[in-house]
Image 1 (cartoon, rainbow, N blue to C red):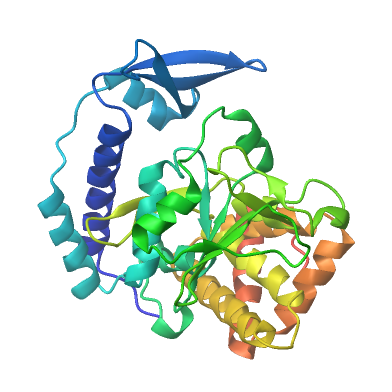
Image 2 (cartoon, rainbow, N blue to C red; image 1 turned 120 degrees about the vertical axis):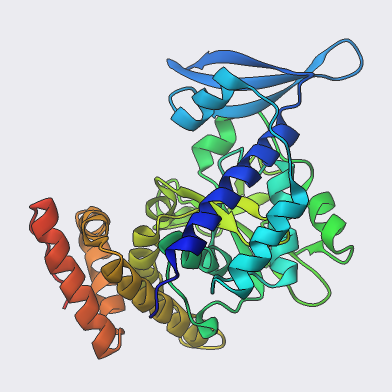
Length: 362
């Protein structure tokens, strides 16, 4: 796997800052004001906007101890949105820099959700669309075969959705603004709650959340007040994936600021998910894709000297108990020999850096 020239990585950072500035300006116009609130002993920022009828509409901003948010609140300056310049940056990064642009449908959907407030409300883009962002985030060229997709997966922590006291606009309306044929996908259980939406071409958008208890919740959609009327499917192991996510860019149009899982967590999670795939229908195809993406990330993390980060999250997963260990062993056993050797090397190297014992999965 080849690295991306530092010049293009620097351009990506500039694009990220410009896009974040533009998104902030759109979310928090000069007519509003920031308001602190204490909830359960912790301080959060909200933004009050006049509703045109003598009252205000309140938006959730984020925790006060987030340094990026605190700096923005302190400055609250209006940054110029240079749309054309950002589009030129995106074109340069994808055409010359070797970074990855999503397909048009995925890009339009994520952009619509982002503009609706998904990432402000601490949603996390997961799945293959998130994987596409790792090319720029890690500075490595990723092969196209590992990034093709026909769906977009969105996750949000259940507790966050309950507590932010804010919501996206209706999800159906956001998606139909991209393609009018989007409709809720009926659940086999007959539940009226929708966790997935699909268009006439078969493109699927699915909402997921961490399982709040035993597997008894798996087939029961979770009500998510912040997701604009959508519910979410509870999944085991998802809390590990979306913990401590990172900000980066989706290289679509003028750039879309997104939040994705930490790449080390994504790689370990893919081993776990692969171990639980069914081998009928599309299950085998998805399992092979899981293993391929995990192997590519192990290679990229090794080359970018991030063995300590991987070893830390690997140990976190391993220490969660026997079910997690069995899943990791099974997933690691599916890796091709070269990828398995990379995983072994990066874990041994990472263990030395963090000065902890790491039990290899082989």
